[in-house]
Amino acid sequence: MRRVPVFCAAALGLLTALVVVRFGPLVRLDDAVSEAARRAALRHDGWRTVMSAITHSADSPVLLAAGLLLAAVLLWRRWRTGLWFLLGATTAATVVRLTVLTLVHRPRPVDRLTPTAGWAFPSGHTTSSAVTAGVVVVLGCAVLSGRRSRRVLVAVAGTWAVLVGVSRVALLAHWPSDVLGGWLLATAVTVAFARGLRVQRSFSSTRQGSPQRSPQRDDDQDNPATIPSA
Image 1 (cartoon, rainbow, N blue to C red):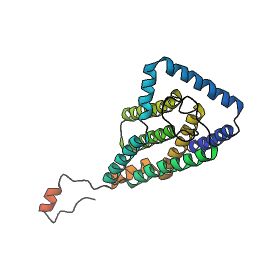
Image 2 (cartoon, one colour; image 1 turned 45 degrees about the vertical axis):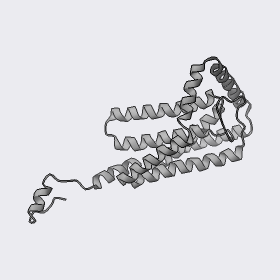
Image 3 (tube, rainbow, N blue to C red; image 1 turned 180 degrees about the vertical axis):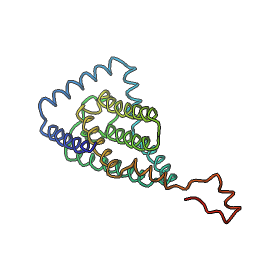
Image 4 (cartoon, rainbow, N blue to C red; image 1 turned 30 degrees about the vertical axis):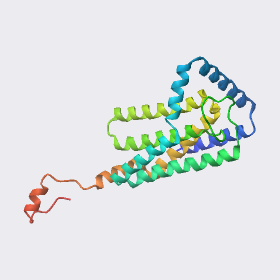
């Protein structure tokens, strides 16, 4: 896990360079997949409807509302490290994505099947959904104790993030390499912040440090001579 952020950052840098120089094999692969996605969407209305619903689940207002709700819960639980993780990962991913987006200036595919705005690389919906899924997984796995519940959380959150990326290609909102760039960026940032802040360890410390109500607390109050256990 220590090398994951470095590997993803290096892979993102290489991919960005290939996009900038319009590397032939990458361009041809993007064109081929995008054309196949266009044909599939035009032939199957149901597929297009499902992809539209998935892609809108990662719209900015939806994720912003979810982020504010999660931040409120973290504040209520007084889990400051979890809050810093949420704010740090989302802010860093946004800043890096917008910087790369502005510098690369990559056009989107033509004949798009969903409303879009701005440049293409890396994909905003993909990056945001993957960061959201990563934050939920890291925080959730720190809170959940059961192995099965953790696996379900990882599977649900991961599947949703992957499907959002697929939907961006299926609706011709992005090239496949745009989506790959979003996944690499989100993974690098989320894992780096999770490790740097030691999120799971911080939750264990917070839980151990929280005051526990002793079953004998009422009796202790009635008997001042009794010394509460530490």
